[in-house]
Image 1 (cartoon, helix red, strand yellow):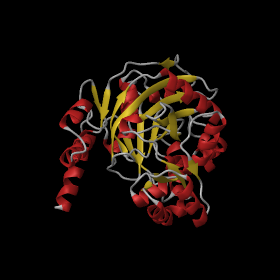
Image 2 (cartoon, one colour):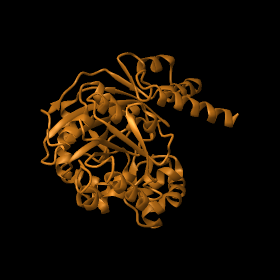
Image 3 (cartoon, helix red, strand yellow):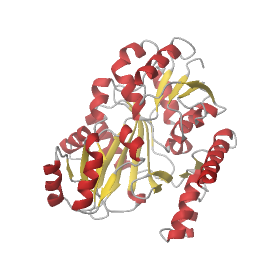
Image 4 (cartoon, helix red, strand yellow):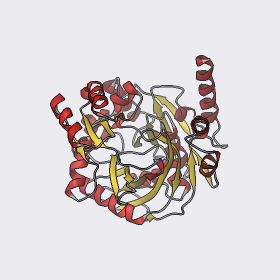
Length: 386
């Protein structure tokens, strides 16, 4: 195998999932990040390469990526783990396409897809349920939203990377008009939507993860749901479970058809206990945090993507075994202990997320350095706080 994979922003479990999935097929990997200590860069399955941060220095990131393409990364298959890399590459894709294989839709389709407003508009066109949402332009629109929407509501940026880095949160929640106005003052620079919160626990958040060829062929499909996230309700996954849901897969692919999407993606929905319908949370046009669970279930989306980008697409894979779980190791345990102490969770609920067969998002006995580094960092932070 001479065609390398280039994993961009290889900072955490998302990237590790891609790297280790590719290692199963003995595909050489170059892991890129602005932090030399990023988990993907210290994996035994990848050659490390430092690139500038695509959010803070997009031009430097693109220049560094072009230099990589003229050297050891030439003709490599690109894998994006975060929106920042996609946004930095998009305006320069013609130059990069001369050096790399870019297995996702062109910028003219991708740029609008990064906007949650576009995702919602396309979903409504095909009858895919969307939470009741208002897109305010000014304070008056926000005050009107307080009269029209049912609380609680969330303010969610239409394009999220800078928001997440500033607030270290996915959304701002408001439980009444005053909280909504305060949240608007913080979030207004990020052009947020205001949406009603769909009721239900973290385990009501379902995912279709897939890889689609340029002609729309569904080469790999996986479904599953979160078991818990941190912070609860509006955080990132700490535990998840595979469960094949063909109806969710069908409807999710219909949405991806309407979006004309090619590449790896995650369609996330929330299953409303009031009517049983799946409401769109978002479409991530890239890999997602627990992609390694799909590989553990026999749907190796990174390897499928790599083969298709090389011009040797495999036979489509749809359907898989269920009840296999994924956890984010020590972070899951730490968050669970906090919630057990507060009474929000029970020891039994924690134990249910740890039943085998189990895949850890960081720990792997065949690739131990990322887990050891994560433990050292967590202990270092605790020591600093102490």
